[in-house]
Every structure is written in structure tokens, then in C-alpha cells.
Image: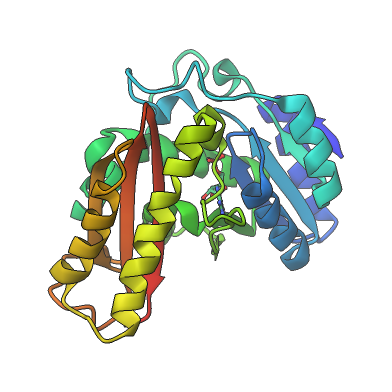
Length: 282
Ligand code: AMP
């Protein structure tokens, strides 16, 4: 597994692979890798010839009061995991390498749907994501890029700008990987104390309860949403950021769940903000 730290290094690596006729898969991450990330990498390995994973905590997608400095970083541990997952090359630049002096171009997806869910809570977040993902796709000359359903709105945003800007890459969405308890795997789970981790089970539990009601015939979105809200409100350590049900992947308001839809939630457990979602076949 080779480690690439500069734009020049990744550009010559990907050019070499392209010239050799390889199909290149890209898996962007912010590191502190867990089974969710590794599943993306294994999926990329199964579907492409060469996997380039990036490990880059992207400052542009964090707000001023968010956890950029505190975000967990363990590059050595990450490399061991990536090697086992079959990653061929890791791109690990510094912020200065990605955003050198004079950098002033951003990708801004303007659809209303980008202002919902995490877009409403984290202004500028998707601008940062779209900008870095565009740059990573270009540097890696990626034929396919892999993202988790865990960040479903991110996948909607990426699919949108890839189509709008005619970027020649195929976007693949991989289902959410969970712990046995049901908790969606996340690098931010590291912030949780044992008691908070127990409390965090309310996210998946509330979504499962709502899904059961939907599977049982309840289709009124507000009623399904209320089931989630009631379940979360029973947990004293949990505070709701949002609970929403939208059509998927358009992320439009719906009164009844009669087509593909997403139940998406963001909940603070103590100081830690966690997200989760379930996609319903309408
Ligand atoms: P991050 O490092 O948090 O930016 O995540 C990098 C990629 O891994 C994103 O595409 C995430 O959606 C994906 N990912 C994170 N957690 C999970 C999970 N539990 N299951 C599936 N994919 C995930």
C-alpha cells in the first residue's frame, strides 16, 4: 500500500494506473476508521481494480464551533486497517496541500434540499464536502466513488453536483454498518462514555419502531415521525436536533409515505451529535 501526501504524488499515481487501463475506485474518509469505512473499501475493491482511499479531516466542511480540532486522528492505526481491507493507495494531504495560498474556488450545490437536515444545522458543511469531493475525484481520476448511506444527504448532494457538472464518475452508496447493538458505526462514537453509548441506542431503536409501524401499514409521515420523537424523548440524555421524513433521494416534504422515503434523525447525546437514518420502500 503506497502513501501519497501531495497533489503531485496522487496525480502521477492515478495517471500511471489509468495508462495501465485500471478502473480506479475512490473512498474519501476523514480517518479514525471503523467497520463502516472498511466496508466501503472492501466494496470498492470488489468493484474496481485499484482502490485509492483518502484520509483527510477537511477543515472547510466544519463550522467555527464544531469539532475540527478535537476530531479523532489515528493515521498509523488507519493504515494497518486499510492495508488489510485491500486498499492500494492512501492519500493523506495536509490542509495547506489541499488549500494552498490563492485557493478560492468552491462547489456550492444550491438546491433547497441542501438546506434541510444537516444542511440546515451546519451552514457551509455541504459546500465544504462538495468542494473536497470534487477535488479528490479529479486528483484520483476516479471511475467510481463510494459513500455510506450513513450520510445519506451527502450522497444526494454528491449525486446532484456530479450530474450537474457532468463529472465522469459513478457514485455508489453502501448501506449503514451497525454495531451488534444497532448503533450506527461512527468515528464520533469514540466521544461517548459507557452511559452515553447505552443512551445512544435510542437512535436506532426509535427508527426501528417507526419502521415496524410503517411495515404494519402506517403511512402518514407525521404519525410515523411522532413515533420516533416520542421514543427519543423517553431518553433523558438525548436531545433532538431534527427528526424528518422526506422523499428519497429528492428530500422533499411528503404527507404520505407512498414512494421511497428516508427517516433521518440527528440527536445530541450529551455533547456528541449523532446521525442515523432508515430508507423506506414506499
Ligand atoms: P467520514 O470519515 O465520517 O467522513 O466517513 C467517510 C465515509 O464513510 C462516508 O461516505 C460515510 O458515509 C461512510 N461511513 C461512515 N460511517 C459509516 C457506517 N456506519 N456505515 C457505512 N458507511 C459509513
